Length: 335
Image (tube, rainbow, N blue to C red; front, side, top):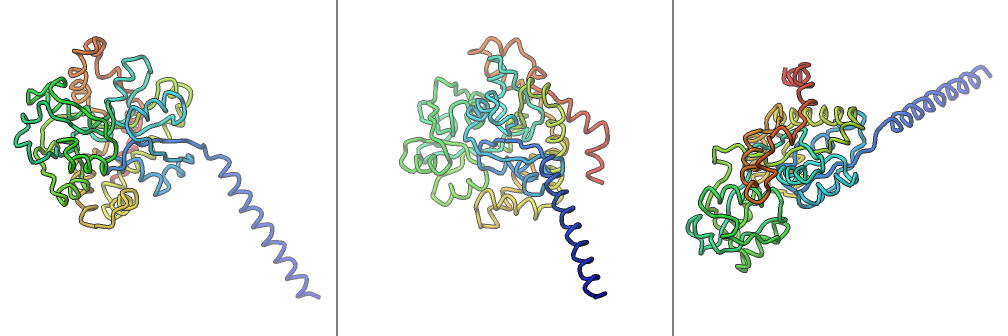
C-alpha cells in the first residue's frame, strides 16, 4: 500500500513537471516573433544572414525567422516595400535606386564593402576593352552584379551604351549561355569560379583585388518599418553581428553552413569560398561604406539628377550598429 502511494506520488510529480515544461515551451514559442527575411542569391556573400538561422541566434533574440530566396535585388526590394519580407539581405544598388524613387529604404548594415567578383569571358575577349559591343550576362537588370560590372567597366572607358547587359538569371544558366556564346562575359564568385574554370571559361579580371570601396550588399529595411518596429530591428542586428562573430572565429562551423546552403560537397571549393569571400571581405562592425555608396551615386548622376543631390548618409541608418558598438556589445563577443 505504501509502495503504491509512493509510485502514485512520483507519477503525479512527473506529470506536473512535464506539464510545466510543456507550458513553458508553448509560452516561449508564443513569445517568438515571426519574421520573414529575404536573401537574393546563393552565394558566400550571404553567409552572415544564414548563420544566425543555423546556429539559433535569431531564436536566442526572440525571432522565429523564415529565410526566403528572392533572386535578384530588385525583386527583394519590391517585396520589402510591400511588407512581404520586412528585412532583406540584398544588393545595395537596388536599395539606393529605390530610395531615390521615394521608397524610404535604407541600409542598416553593410555586409560586403568590396567587389566579391571575378570577371569571366569567352575566348574572343583578350582584354577588358574588347567587351565593347558584346553581351554581358547578369543575374537581373539592376542587380548588384550589374551595378558592379557597370562601375568597373566605366573605369576602363566602357560606358553602359557600349555594352549590352543581358538578364540571364542563375549562375548555371549564365555559364551555359557563355558556352554557346549567347553572352561573352559575366561576373562570378567562389566557388562558381572553380566550375567556370572546369568548363574552360577564362578569368580576365579579379575584382576582389581592386582597391576600391564598394557597397556590394547589406541589410536593408524601410524607415517606416524602423519607426514601427525598432525592437525587432534591434534584436535582428544583435543576431546578425553575433553571426558575423561566429563566421570569423569558427572557420569549420562557417564552412559547414556554406556547404549546406551552396549544396557543394567539394571541401576545397568551400574552403576557397570561405577564405576569399567571408574571411577576406567581412568586417567585425559592418558599417556601410560611404565612399562605396558615393561611387554608385556618381555612376547614377548622368541618368538620375537626384543622385547628384544626394549624400551617402541619406541611404543608411546606422543607429542600431552605433548602439551595439558604443555599448561594448560587439567588443565583448571577441574577448
